[in-house]
Length: 349
Ligand code: UD1
Image (cartoon, rainbow, N blue to C red; front, side, top):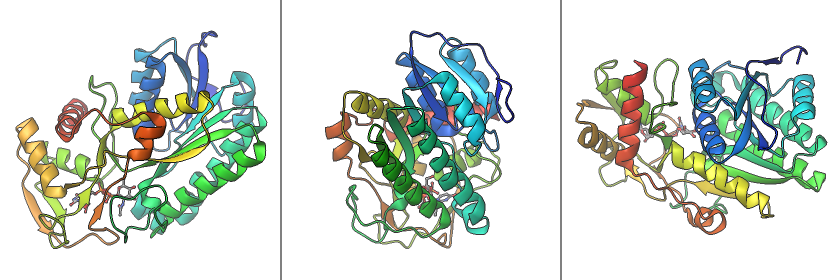
């Protein structure tokens, strides 16, 4: 393909496999989803604008699945590039992961977040509908829930965001729902992730946070690797078991498998749906640190510092819908997440 903003970086497809377009393929969760999809026999067309994605991930995906993974450098907001790609590849499904994901950055750069996350989603889903794509899986977040309500939160719990990042996810959900409904032929699954952690067990891909790690597991890994002197524990005065924040961690490979399950559900004619993806169990910050130390044998010194603005005491999912509708529940525990995250850390540093 020669049009601007789109350059083919890999070998041609093999036609007998079902094609799926994965946006943001160089990102943390999407790269794991590519492995699951290719492993299940799909032909994956990955795109990314590489503004945040990892080129090492693309290389690893091509090495893992040379006949099932193709990569195009493209931006989801580029209408002509996306239209050409959809016209040429005719995917039966789109998994849309591309987007910006830093809460802090979204507060000082909201325009970029609305442009990428809402504008990008609108472009992708509208074009998907125009080019006859039948199924759409969207990467959403538990951040759309009002955090001031009792846990576990189910899919009908109250919604309220406290930062632009959250609002972009909620608005993008709305966009996908409305465009899909109007199309009459596009069915969707909106997947609300809780706290993804860990990395591919065989070390092919993992999380590559830029700058200071904002999320807990990468922050722990950096301390264990000696890149930070101690883990800052943001508050130990929450009304929780040990005073530290409680979250619902889910192994990224389980999350990837859930995308496969969601696609299978839609392919079997399942109705459009919105589903929580978590483990259903909350672990505190200190419990995660303990699990990490126990399972990896590394030292993780901690310092308690004041609460991080915007944080809540606890957030964990009611995952019964995922189990009932998708037949999915996570199979990897917290120790596995710690071991795989650490394995990835020692590989990349
Ligand atoms: C954060 C984002 C959320 C996003 C989610 C998953 C904020 C306010 N929220 O949520 O929008 O969907 O990540 O990517 O940023 N912690 C420490 N020390 C650290 C890092 C974290 O004590 O160095 C604590 C936090 O205070 C929290 C828990 O660990 O209690 C989990 O934090 P984190 O991994 O950032 O996830 P969330 O707060 O759930």
